[in-house]
Image (tube, rainbow, N blue to C red; front, side):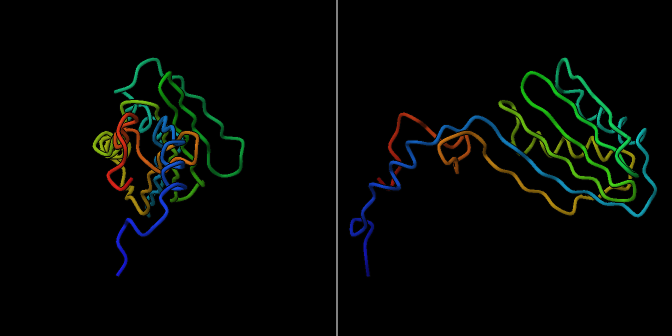
Amino acid sequence: PYSPDDYDKTSPLEQWKSQHPLGLQIITQMETENPLSKDVLTKSLRRALKQFRQVKIEEYDDLGDGCVLMATWREGSVFVLWDGRGHVDINLFAYEGLDEEESEAFNLWFRGNTSLRVVLYDEHPRGFGRVVSYKHDSDREAEPHWA
């Protein structure tokens, strides 16, 4: 058997140190069998965004059967894409103040009184330098335990 000391750790350590996580992106897909509308989704988005300040929402509904809702604020953005039937994609990004608990609250508030159910949930740290670590997990001053 090989031990960790048998491997060259130079390249992984350089990659680790090159990471600069800046925020978190969360992709959620929701579906329902019941009818939706742009008005229902806009109300859902406004309800889910109450925790954020100075939110600007734009609506685009000349794109086929559904619509795109775009909300921006100083610390992030969210895009809601509705196919005009029973599928909704949500792309939520925030620099600060978004963790798993808050994103679950966002999804819960967004679903509200609808019959939407989550069929896909995926989160990714975002930044530069081949980011693979979450901002809250990386202590830039400390060496990783494996180095």
